[in-house]
Amino acid sequence: MSQSKIALYYRFAPLSDPEAVRLWQHALASSLGLTGRIIVSPQGINGTVGGPIAAVKQYVKTTRSYTPFQGMEVKWSDGSEQDFPRLTVKVRPELVAFGAPDEVTVTAEGVQDTGVHLKPQELHELMEDREREGRPVVFFDGRNAVEATIGRFKDAVVPDTTTTRDFLTELDSGKYDHLKDQPVVTYCTGGIRCEVLSALMKHRGFEEVYQLDGGIVRYGEAFGDAGHWEGSLYVFDERMHTEFTPDAVTIGRCSRCQSPTSELRNCSDPSCQTLTVLCAECAAATPDRVCTVCQERAA
Image 1 (cartoon, rainbow, N blue to C red):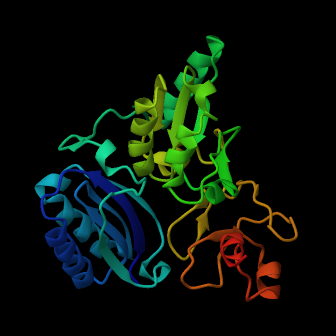
Image 2 (image 1 turned 90 degrees about the horizontal axis):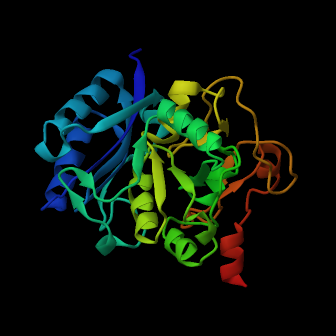
């Protein structure tokens, strides 16, 4: 049996005909027997695909051969096409749906006016430098809040977000204005959301903004569970979460019984994408459970 892998990647680059790129990407991935999710937009490409490693490598090589996608960074993890129900390739107005397409400028060099990129070791160096100055680094989670319930950087600020669009409301609310003169490091799964989030924060007066280059994935590759990350990492496939080492702590708590768990479950409404932290026992006991978002809508 051939070895399988999952590739997580993105590339910000202006695309004049996203629909043509979508058709090409669907044909390419299909021909190689890959499954996963690919988003194409006028701002570039973002995807997660899985399958036999030779096929995934061919997909990456061919995609990188397209001039706007040259230099596209790829993060690899264990998994296969079985971790995705099917292949979907869609065109969206934004590569990440912050609801601010006119506020983000993308050139051939990527998103403009982002926070300073920090590699994992550079993050540790910055933390040491700012600690000596008496200005400790503030971690700012760039993911949806439920993802942070099972894993996050220690003492991170976790905005009250259900979807990525909620970040604009959060940033404009004033509740984080006290951080505008502090060293803030944004982080997310693979780095893509922070490309936009860090720029939005700078546009709103945050003076010293950084972003974790390669996201939590790269940090976990470098330090495992021996650094400042704790817990599990939510992933966008049927695994739902992964851990960097067997030493990972379980910080998530079941929303019903409060027992330790990293399990995330979908709402029973197939049209709803809201996730809930729910242990196996409580999930089995409530097969028709409805998330709080759907409950509020029905009220």
